[in-house]
Length: 288
Image 1 (cartoon, rainbow, N blue to C red):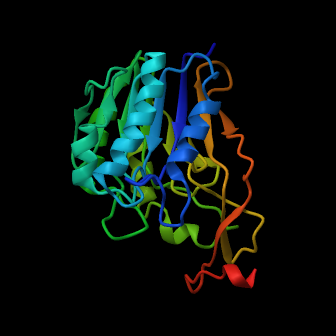
Image 2 (cartoon, rainbow, N blue to C red):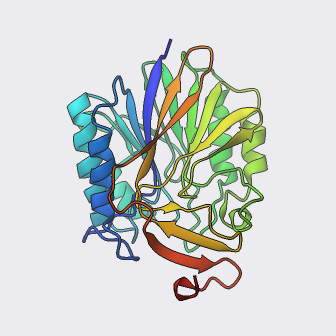
Image 3 (cartoon, helix red, strand yellow):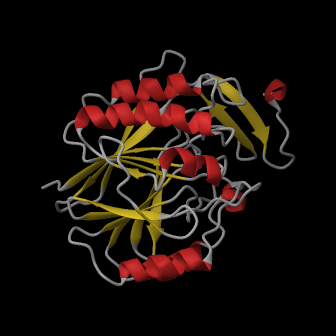
């Protein structure tokens, strides 16, 4: 029996104009995936794990809140957000508050250090961490946050807990760049999570679906909304292509958690946006 169902989005990269720095209609990508998710039944929560605004602006955050908030309001469910490396803490807080919002937009979260917060949805505890390192692509969760998290997890929640953050604590050897841009102290997070009631760790950042384990706990990385990474590119290249994605996370039942990937119906899906050499960091689109 499914007890909770989460629509997990990440990497919306919206700005005040709607377009990201690569010229992608980020607002349109978000509209498309939300439109195609409209018939997904029995959702209990919408979660957006960072890189809300491509330029870190309040305008970009507000544009995402307008769209995701409307989707959540129509379904009578809460919506929750985390920071990402493209975000900025002050504009994020100005728009989202604790970033744990009810269907009507009322702030439901209990804030912790930096832009962390916690709330409950029908007994399921939702914990958001702040892995933003200003000016850097990689992530880090400081000791103050980890102590706060440890304190929360010392008491189990009725339906267990979910931890959400932008930067994944896992990597794959098939992509050499991941180890430079991931959560840099994932081993410390693992120490805190070990033996707790956390049922899944939900992340974004990679613009590519990926799963693994941390301290025996499933970790899921949802594909990006604005673009996705095409893993058929040679290992030394990162190819970004159009095609919004999302995940439905099912909790409860004998196979929990179960992750279903959604892809928006986009006639331009797969069209290349950028091609970057991971060694030099240079755009090599013309050399494909």
